[in-house]
Length: 540
Image (cartoon, rainbow, N blue to C red; front, side, top):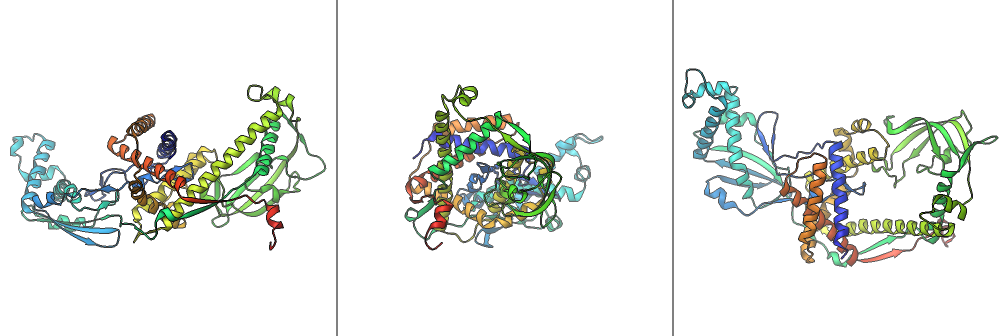
């Protein structure tokens, strides 16, 4: 197993990112135990904390795995004579029909009246305990409001007790009242039993189609010593640019290596709407820092020339929301420059990096080591992705709870917006325009299979954690708790200590299981093959 300090730091980064996202883009998912409905009735829900993506692009999915597992407390409902009938609506949805006895209904009626007396206070001509019921009802807003207030009191007194007795793992925030409020209000009589129906989502048990220990994963190295050296040369050229100067290009068009001043508009090919932060005037563009390969379409352009062309955002583009999307690009070239750069030698290094490197060769070795380490990190991330996919392929589950899929997609989408803002790609105002129900739902539908797989993996985490006898150290949990408390406090956000602790434990379990799988599942690594070598292979 890897060091706990590594896992704790990783979990800390997840939570810090989540807090920032929550502060910038308020979630559309409910966070409270009891939520007011527009008609005055209340909907009971179990608490949940929101988390987002790990490393800006992979969702932090611990909160979706954190189900509210209720104790086997059916005896409590039996003691109070509440009748409960459970119906299986689907593999993930259960409906409860409850009947509250008349004596409990009358008790809640009396409690409501007593509470109203305290709220209304003294009325002229009456002692507080002698105010007629009809006047109390008038003071609280009428007969309907009074009845609904009593119904709320009944639900508050009984719902938690009933939920605690169902014996199912309940998905957070999935409990919803299905009875019609108008029918409840019209049929309410404090002298009679009170009937109510509600539904909740649960997680069906997972079935292992084959043991996860038997799976193999295959990953492919994305580089070698040659590509590392090429990357080092690119870095050195960027350092040289910092100390070089630019000269106006004369007698030719744009070519790779140049820098230019240009106007650019990148619009959605489908909606014609601009991509946030991608429509700018008089921006500086370096053709050697070009993730969209714009320079290929711009080759030969001269000052004053304008071109329009189509592009598809690459599958590995840093903004996940845009990957694979079709765009229309219009560029107008205003000014064109070429670089005049100093030589990279010992003098250059001693002048500009004397505290870090002793010579040009020393600096080159240092950059090579850093580049190789980045490639190892990329390979490790690829391994993590493949391990999760492999485990999911071993699982058979009747149905993935929709609530968890929606929450996962919502958090993932919001985190993408935060990433764009953090990188200076767009303002918060621009991105808030993208935080619409239609766009979020579109994102969820587009990525539904991936979201379902991630939720499925999360459901399996506890199973693997227990099966492999994995453990968390109390001191690590407490240290992480303190970090999270400070982060919530720095954002001036309220939190529930018990819920936060559950979140921290789930997060650390998730990381622990991932690291165990990476260390113990059989892996095959395919060496990197350069495009030149691949084209020279027989049969290509």
